[in-house]
Amino acid sequence: MTEKELMKNRRDLAEKDVVEQPQHHKHLYSPLTDILENGDQYTILVDVPGTDREHVQITLKKNVLTIQAETGMQHPEGYTMVLSEYGIGDYTRSFVLTDVIDQEKIEATVTDGVLKLVLPKAGPAKAHQIKISTGN
Image (tube, rainbow, N blue to C red):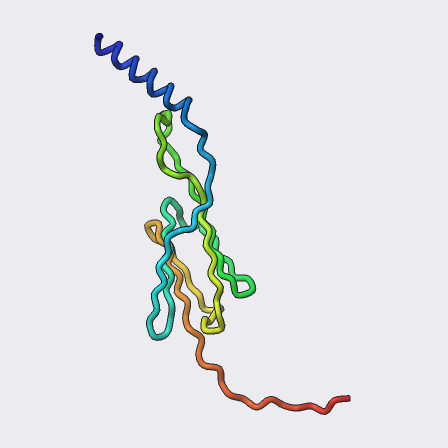
C-alpha cells in the first residue's frame, strides 16, 4: 500500500469514526470548589476552566449565592473536528449564606479559569434599645 493510499484510509477511518460518534450536547457541571476561612473572611475558589469574566455571572438572592459560567470548546478556523473528548457545558453552583457574611461587601475576580470570591464576615450585632410605642 502506498503512502497516499494509507493516508486516504486513515482519513476515511477518521471520517467514519466522527460520523458514528454521538452528538455532543451541552452539559451542566458543578465546578470543583474550595472554601477557606481566616479570621475576618471566607474565600471561595471555584474551578471554571474555559471561561472569562464576561461569561461568569454571580447573583445573590434571598441569601443564596449562585455562580453560573458559560463555556464552549472552539476549534481553530479551517480545521474539522476528528475526535472530541472535552466536555462542552456550563457551570452552576449555589451556596446558602448566613448572617455571618456581610453580603454587601462580597468581591469576585476570575483569573486563569479560577473564580475567587471573598466573603467578609459581618461584624457583631450591636446591642441597642428598642423603643416601645403605645398601641392604639
